[in-house]
Amino acid sequence: MSYLALYRKYRPQTFDKVVGQEHITKTLENQVKNNKISHAYLFCGTRGTGKTSVAKIFARAINCENPVNGSPCGQCNACKQLSQASNMDVMEIDAASNNRVDEIREIREKVKYPPVVGKYKVYIVDEVHMLTDSAFNALLKTLEEPPAHCVFILATTEVQKLPATILSRCMRFDFKLIEQNVLEEMLKNIFNDSGIKYEDEAVAFIAKEGNGSARDTLSIADMCVSFGNGNVTYDAVLQVLGVNDDYKLCELVQNIIDEDAGAYITNINDLVKDGKSLSMLARDMSIYFRNLMVIKNCKDYKGLIVVRKDIENRMLQQTQSVTNDELTEFLNEFGQVELNLRYSVRPQLLIEIAGLKCMKIKKKI
Image 1 (tube, rainbow, N blue to C red):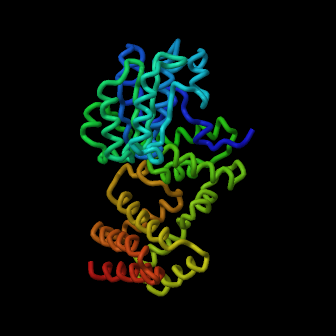
Image 2 (image 1 turned 90 degrees about the horizontal axis):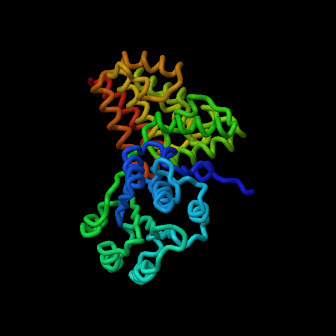
Image 3 (image 1 turned 135 degrees about the horizontal axis):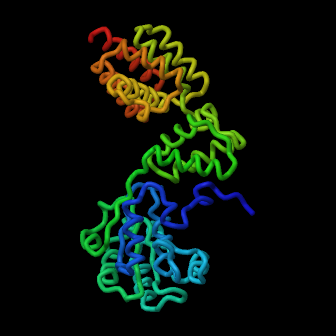
């Protein structure tokens, strides 16, 4: 059997396996239990937060012969048949490539026919905001008066692009970004199940880089597992993501604090020679200054940053040498560099000037 990516292998099959969206899964479970199924649903939210997975689970649950706590049992004839890609009752449509009015008219013709296996025929329309105006108009009548056996689930990452007439006819669910600690727990469970060795710091860093998306987190984890050959270490994660070493960042920030322009420029040049991305460096410097601000101002900062213990100790020392005003100015400088780098023909010069400006700020304040 060919290799399955982690996000596909561990795609949730029941509502209780969906992470970070309890406010949605609980509502849908109760609808299945009470047999109060709406005719149209709208799932909106950032990519990788579970919209399509929840839509597929719900489609099987409302057709399941013996649902378990509102989730599909996975054992009955309906569940088994609807799990196959060839089934005719759960139709997935990519609106990004099927966005014309003719395709929606075709759906309107097909919804008249009853389901083959279960009680409902379900249409999952992904990236629904990509439909043309005429396609939305064609869909509108079907959403308003659909056949009793038909359920529409519309999914989108850009809900603001949907017409108000569509929004008013759907039961809306907003998928939120998944908290970092939830992503960490998910990763550890998957690694343990797969027999993959890992460092807690590595898992925390992967979850942070996932930015609230379960799919992005698992995609990053997949690369790190392959790179480390089944052993996910903090250093391996840094290498895979091209992130700058915390020790180098700490040294650069210390150069700024010490107002040592020569050492700062030399260290930047060494990073360039090592092939480090300057846009990534600007981002990492901004994150480092942000972490300094968190350590300086928050008593319980450990849950807000992800750094090694020895780096954390050095950062604690650095916070004694900088003020909040200075850190704010430093963040502004490197934030501006992040914006300007995409248009610059001399990116190294921008990074060097930003550091020198920070030293000047330190003198002034």
